[in-house]
Each structure stands twice: as C-alpha cells, then as structure tokens.
Image 1: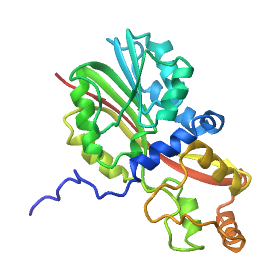
Image 2: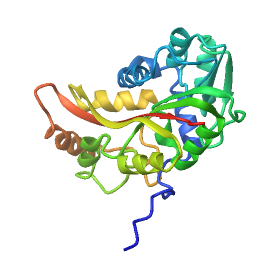
Image 3: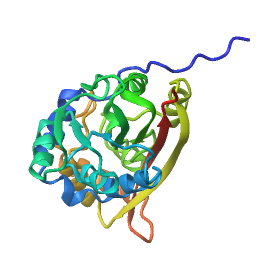
Image 4: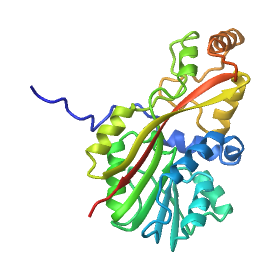
Length: 272
C-alpha cells in the first residue's frame, strides 16, 4: 500500500501578506496595550530555550512586532548582534523607537534577507501563522542558521477562536475568523525539514472576557482581526450583532466568555 504523502504544500488559505503588514503597521501604537496572550506565549517560548545558549553571538527576532521580546532576548543573551525582522514597517518603526535591536530589517519569513549560516538563534513568536508556505519558512530558517543553531517559534493552529467561528455561523456563511493550519501539518513539515526536533507541542490557552466586545476590541487593536479572503467587509447590522452575541453567550462559563487559542511551540536544532 502506498503511504499517504506528506502535506508539504498547502492551499493558499492565509491572508494576503500586504493586508497583514498593513493591519499590524496600523496597530503598532495599540498592540502592547492588549497583548496579554502574546506576552504569555512568548515568555513560555523563552523558557523552552537553554539559558545560557552555548553560543548566542548572532540572534534574530523574526516577526519582532513592537520589539518587546527583542529587548528580552537582549537582556537574556546579550548577543554581539541582534536583528529585528518584521513584515510590517509600522512595527519596525515602533521597535526602533524603543531601541530594541542593533538592526531593523523589513523582511518575509519565507524569503529571509539574511546570509547563509549567519545566525545562532532565530526566535519567532506568533508571527508564522500568517505564512502560507511553512515548509519554505523552515527551509529559510535552516539556511540562515549555523550548525547547532536553534529555531524557536510559536504559532497558531486550527481550532483557534473556535467559539467565535462557531458563533458567526449563526449569522451568515461569510469568513469572519482567521484560518490556521492544523497541528498535524506542523508536525509533518517539521519532521520532514531536516531539523532535529527538540520540542514540538500544541497547547490550548483560554482567555476569558466579560462580554464579546472586549474580545473583538482586543483583536482589532492587535491587528489580528479578520484578514481572510471571503470576509464580509460590510458593517454588521444590529440584528446580526445581537444574533452573534446570543450565540457566543452559549459558551459562557463561570469565568466569563472563553476564547481558545491553539498555540504551537517548537524548538528545532540545525544539525551539522
């Protein structure tokens, strides 16, 4: 019997990167004010890394955002050179204002503007879910890492914000919630990448809100609101909004309205 082929290429379901870059650029000034989950995820990813690293002279924060974790990487490892890379110019500008890194580079994780075998650590927290070709992301990370270098990433998997997605189905059939690849694809692609997998896991993280508007406000100010093709760009009417609120309220628990994030954590080593 023929084995099932690995899902090395996925259909184009992620949003247009130009829209992603624009959305996050526009959210640069408000991002940190609502980034509770993002801080929690990035801090957990940092704990998965060895401290100290055997060598950490060259470090890249890929998808650096406002530079919050860039600055933590500087404090923790004190590298000779720290580079902040992001697709969104607005985020890079904000990070530069905070003096987060030595260099600020506009770049795409699928086409890294970095030299071969130039980095000892690539750190990327909650950025790679916007990349359509994760196999290419892994290939690029492997290219620019030195032997023994680490690629540490967190991302989002299918099932993220499933409560919100389910609730919108009570309103219409349009796409209202961002789609993400399933964890089994992350596993297959990492296994096929040539990296040594030190750690790869998917952990559900639940945030609670008193009302739905708190969640939608947070998504908007993060720049992570709906960016998918097929989304409804029109205004949501009062009747539709009430239907959505009622549907979401069926998920209410003692702590409030839950919003579940399926967070993927990976630490991969380039063998040499």
